[in-house]
Length: 279
Image (cartoon, rainbow, N blue to C red; front, side, top):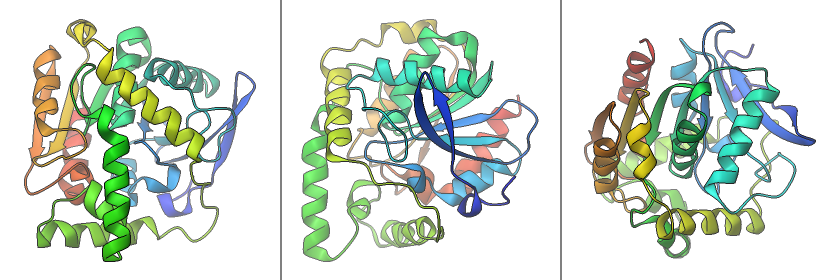
């Protein structure tokens, strides 16, 4: 097993005839922690500080769902189909139970898995995400375009604007985060296609416009909900609402942070996640 996320080998597993790309590290025993990523993201977009920190105690598995990065197939345009792919991926790896850490779009996927297949979920971490029907996800396309325009104009990365607050300390954290993403020198993942982004945007719009959070009341699993206090992609108030809708939730809001608060405050986030998962 690799000693760090930057060195973890990219593997593939057959999921109903389609290869899914994934990486794993950490102990081989115990319930694994499966990480579900944000829109436009591939394996290399996970912060090594978060993955390595969690892998100090847990078997961590990160995955490209259908059509994303190095995985085959076509990205579905609904969160429900992504959730079904997640369950099929767990089955393909021979996993009966897993903990889920879903960030942004991945958090929506984790919510559906918890509602439709509670038998495969033990505990859930939901970061920077919203319950179905909340405002925000339908405007992701506009937000992405705006961030790319600002990035070009100012010579920065779009994640400076999408994930972090405009304060000096938050922007410094963005620089450090982006440097960590560049630590992996070989075997890097394939960037997402425009087709995948379009399908993910469609799924996010459906989540807001036609989804219902009613099923969250039946999710009895322990849930840790986290976000930054100034999330412009998924308004922070959605995290409060999410925690209220879930009967067994704990809420943590990080100061001076945006959508990527878990990366800005990665040390605190890892400590909270590991404590939460220790049962």
